[in-house]
Image (cartoon, rainbow, N blue to C red; front, side, top):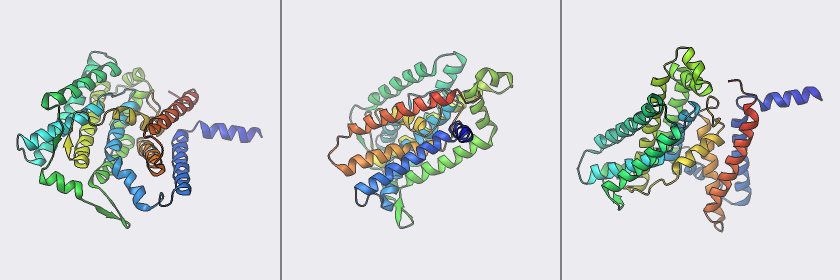
Length: 327
C-alpha cells in the first residue's frame, strides 16, 4: 500500500503531471461533447478549433515564454489590436505593399516588446506595471489612427483569408498552419538552445542565473521582444481572419492567453512547464466555447465562468505541487 502511495506521489510531482491532466481534461470535454451533440467530433470541427484560435495560440506561445522567465505581459491584446489598425491604415491610406506592411508591423511589435523588456530589467520595474502601461498605450494609439473600424480589402489579405489547405479530408487556414509552425520552432528553441535554458534558469531563480554568468538582461529583453513579435503576428492572423482593423479587437485576450498557459501546465511563478502546453490550453478553451455553441441555449459568458473555475483549480494544483518542484 505504501509503495502505491509513494508511486502516486511521484507521478503527481513529476514535471509533466499538470500537462497530462490538461490533455485528459481535453479528452473528457471532447468525449462529452461527442456523446451529447451529433457531429461534434467530426474532423472539420476539430480542425476548426485550430482555425478559430490560431491568433490566441500564437499569443499564448509568446506569453508562455514570458511566464517561464518569471514575468507577465498584459500588453499583448492591445498590441494585437494596434497591429490590425496600423496594417489597415498602411494598406488603405498609405497604399504600402502588403508584404512590407506585414514586415513593418511584426518589427513594430518586436520593438514594442523589447522596449518593455528593457524598462523592466534596467529600471528594475515590475513586469505587471510596465506591461499594464503598455496595454493602455497601445490601445490608446489605436484611437489616434481611427475610432472606427477600418476595412481591409487588399487583394493579398483577402486571398490569404480564403485559402483552405487540405488536411486528411478537411482543411486548415493559413493562420492555423503559421501558428503550428511557430509552436514547433518555439518548442525546439526552448529545449535545445542556450536561450531556452536561460529562460528556464531565470524563471527558476534569477540570482542563481546571474551567479552562473547567464546574460539575464539580454535574455529578458529578448523574451519580451519575442512576446511582442507574437502579439503582432497574432494581429496579422487576426487581420486575415476579420479583414478589418479596430481598436476594440481582442479585448481581454491577454487574460485568455495567461489562462491557456496556466491550464497548459506552466507554473505562473516561472521556471517550470512546457511551451507545448499552450496548445492543449488553447484547445481546452476552444472546446469549451464550441460546446456552448453546440448547446445553443447557454450564454457565451459561461465560457468565462468555466475558464475562471479551471484557472482557479489549476492555480491551486500548481501551488500544491510547487513545494515539490526544486528551484
